[in-house]
Structure formats: C-alpha cells, structure tokens
Length: 364
Image (cartoon, rainbow, N blue to C red; front, side, top):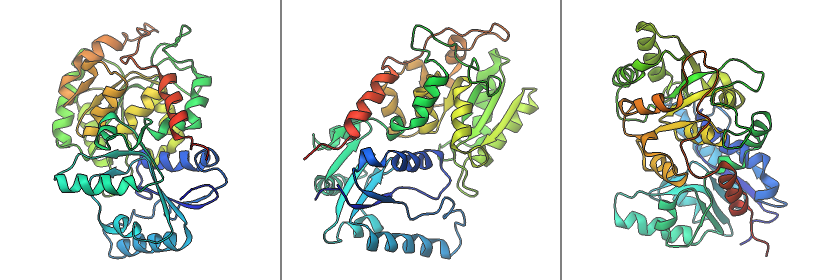
C-alpha cells in the first residue's frame, strides 16, 4: 500500500522530553513533503504528555492517543528512535488493523534477547512499505530487506543552517573546534552529555570525569539531553556538575527542557569537544563538525561510531578512558586555535547526502 496522499501518524517516543525524539518529530514535520509527498502528517502526543509518569492516568492518556491515531490514520510511520527488539503492546495491535500501511524510518533493529524475537520482528518489517535503518548492524539483521540511510537527524534543516553560519572543520576554510563564529556567545568548552540510562551511578561518573579532566583547565558544560522530570538526565547531570565545582572547576549546568532544540544545537556547535553518552548528543555534534567522543552503553552508540569511522580513542566504555581525547583536541586556554582536525573518516556531507537519497521515497 502506497503512502502517497495518506493520512500518516508519526510514531515514536514523543512527549517524554527527550532531545533526540523531539528532533525526529521536528525533522519529520518539516521534511514531510519530501518523506511523504501529498501526505497529511500528524502527531497525537503533546510535547509533555508523559511528564506525569507514573500517575495512574498516564497510561490511559497514551492509550487514548493511540486510539485516536488508529481511527484517523491510513498509514503509520515509526520514526527515528524506535528500536525494534520485540513486538508487543500497541505496536503489535496496530499491525492487525486492516487496510493500513506501515513504514519505519531511521530505526534500529535489535539486538534481540531470543531468536524468536528476531524472527517475529524481521517478518513484521518485511510487510512494511518502506524500511530505512540507521546502522549497518540493523541492516544486516534484515538480510537486505531494508535500506541503510543513517540517522534521521541528518535531514534537519538546522544542520544546513548551522553549516552556513560556521564552516565545517572538515573544509579547507576550517574553523577551530570551539571557536564561536555564530556571534551567539563564547566557546562552550568541553560539553558532557550524561545519560541516566547508562549503568554507572552519577557519583561514579563524576569521579571518572574529574580524574580524566585533570590535565586541562577548560570550561565544562554538563548538558542534560533528556528533560523528563522523573526519568531524565537532570539529576545525574546535577551531581556531576556539583562534584566538578567542588573540585574548583568552572562548570555550567544546562538542561534541554530550558534550552529547547535551538539551544542544544547552539551549545554543541560552540563546544571544543563533546563527551556524550546520549546518542543524539554525539550525532548532532558530528553533523555540526564538533569533535565528539562517545561513551558507549548501547549497541546503537557503537554502531554510529563505526558508521562514521570514529577514531578508536573516541569510543569508550567509561568516561575514565577519554583522557587522550582531551590531549589531542583541546587547545591550551588562550591559544585561540584547535588542531583543525576531526576524529572521524566519513565526511559529514557524505552522511547527509546518503540520508537525502535513502529517505526519499522511490517514485512508482
């Protein structure tokens, strides 16, 4: 069934206050005409719909949003952050609706706990009108039944706008990492994006970061990219910032809930170096040409690193392994220049061009 001219409900982790998922929502809405020509696109979740978790009515509101979408839509598009590891709940029920089309754009497939889960997911995705995955591991699990397109964030108009303001460090007219060419403020120094989903405690993360930063006096910004009041990163980020300040460091604590998408792009674009446990802290930094190191706690993080050819020193299991990234990229205070290099081999322009081609629907 074709999506052209359909009423399309966007499906994702919307309404939870997560930067990456809100970015997917924005990208799909602003690029809707390219992704679904002549289609009518809607999201049924409010921006903060799920902030009341775990109140008893939260699940009912989610069910109501799903029911409204199911009655209205003729097509469903899983967008961006969906990680297909099993089929259950409303996702499984939706597949039983008659006369509906399905797509999955920018998803990850697996890893799976059991072969039966992989078989069920792969079989279901074979019935989708279009499947575009963001990493090689997901593509391999589909055994050639999808398209490898990279992350949906590559389609964001913000990436092109930022590139116009600040020439990529990959080009011959390179701006040093962290040099402010936007006119919006000073360098953000080293930006750290912790994740509440990572296994170590906030105290352990803070101790590792403090020890790893021992060789530099750079400004530090701790950025919480999930703003959910109960499930988000703010508490962990606050502990890290407090511990670093106790050690005498200059630290700024920022939260996506206050900054918005614009503010996050600005901070990541002004950084000399980003350390990120959050996948989209890493992806957006890369797309902006900002040197980034990934603290890998989920397969999708390492998969992105491999896709862009990230230097092995910039992919770590713990913050304690990142000292080499500081030594190689951050200039001494007052030097006014970085190394002018980036720690990856895939040019950003190539990553974006692949996405533009992969996500554009084929003409009948």
